[in-house]
Length: 205
Ligand code: CDP
Image (cartoon, rainbow, N blue to C red; front, side, top):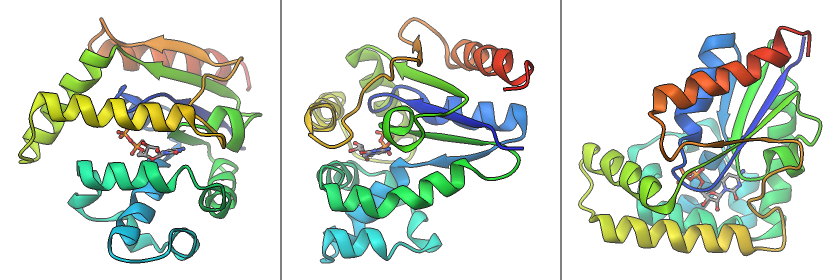
């Protein structure tokens, strides 16, 4: 059995928590596709060519606390605007989406470009202030030396670049369910996502 859940949205909207929770609930595997771009960006910060870096990613590239840093996030967003970088990462993501047992992929273009035929699509968003506050708390909890202002500026810059690029911009697919988590706890947002996925899954896809 294959069953693909596509979860897209802007930075720090809650996609990761929701994706992990949906995957755990239904026994699916989860791929955080942002990690592929972050790992590529980190290799570029170390001096690699972007396209070569994307094509050479190894499982160990997806490890390390620094992948979550603001510097790596910005590098990820820059390499993600290069069409050949995106092309180098497509097949891996599509193969993951088709894995037996079900898959949840979260990113920016999963429902629009990577898996346009996904069984369920969610577009998760939240207001700029709410997203910045959540990411600020996450980064502080991880020991990063950041201010709320710097986090807000980082998200705004990345969102503008990610939504404005020509290739696979951040976009809600026409058939995606919109989940605005601004006024919700993360538990409530996850419960809603589970309900939306469950309605399709229990009816046999
Ligand atoms: O965690 P956060 O939402 O802040 O970012 P992420 O999902 O880890 O993605 C980091 C960067 O990778 C984004 O700003 C995008 O530029 C890029 N990305 C993308 O272009 N396409 C995807 N499917 C996933 C991430």
